[in-house]
Length: 419
Image 1 (cartoon, rainbow, N blue to C red):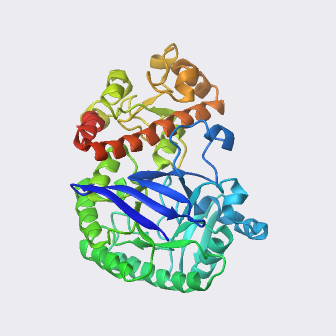
Image 2: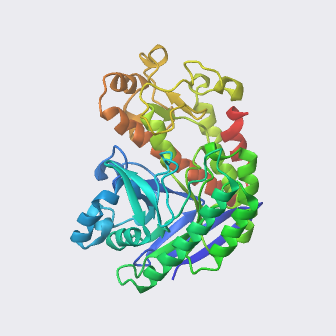
């Protein structure tokens, strides 16, 4: 049976591990931590063999339902679950309802279910459809079906209340099917906390979800574009005080380094790693420091300096040439844009001096720039390797800082260029 072991709680930050997790009870998840972001059951741009060259790979993998829903009948016929089907059977598998890297289309959920968007367009999922997919996939954890369509600025209070009511209704129906399912023995269902930016609805959602036999909680609707930073922090603090300490808390689409650190301070345990994917799609590389050593290795010209610069329409923060529609299109303060010919066409240094990833050990900024300009697939393979490596190292640094009592120093290093 899953056990949450808290090593320490420091000013709201939780550090520890979850043992005996997974269908076979042989996995250990350390937190604060992140889950490996996947699309169609694999890491973006990387084959399974190439993925193994990335250091500090998470034990947990996030399966994004919109990228897999259209194949669920094939997985069902396969009869051995999504892990074996995708070659990910050695990982701990968590299935989320939406893709955190993409902004969810609004206005398409309905009383009996929700909509996800696959390669063929809209897929309407009622509870029975959703649970049929979970039976075919057999993940270790899965997020309950939920109505998270409350992130628009013009969402009414009535619509927010309806999202909470629908989500609780979905949870009750999913739990009923889950408890009777032979296929889902060994799988755990996570309840979802909705409520938009209304404190009373967030607390109602949290308290009611706590009454159900869920293995953990998913904090939905806290994306950057959904609410102000201070509002998010206040809501997270209030909600997490209501949740039991012995169950994990996962948050979606809060994955910028500064946002991660704030959420860790509130008591969030797990995050997705969609941010490195978004950065890669822009043709950019993560270069933010998370130690004194890495701080000295980062060149000043690689990062936006301060919020004033970040709001100006300059070549530093315009939508990058390599960005794809649907992913976050603007460069952040934590990355360098290797599409920039003036800066990087003849820059033969590693992407990030001192980085031990395969990309930085073997290739230069000029080479990555060349690959981007010529449209070579290898550009994003190398960038994805670097960005995952850097991001996973960041989470290792978070855990280490909490054990050593240096979390505030880490936060100061990471956020110094965003002030």
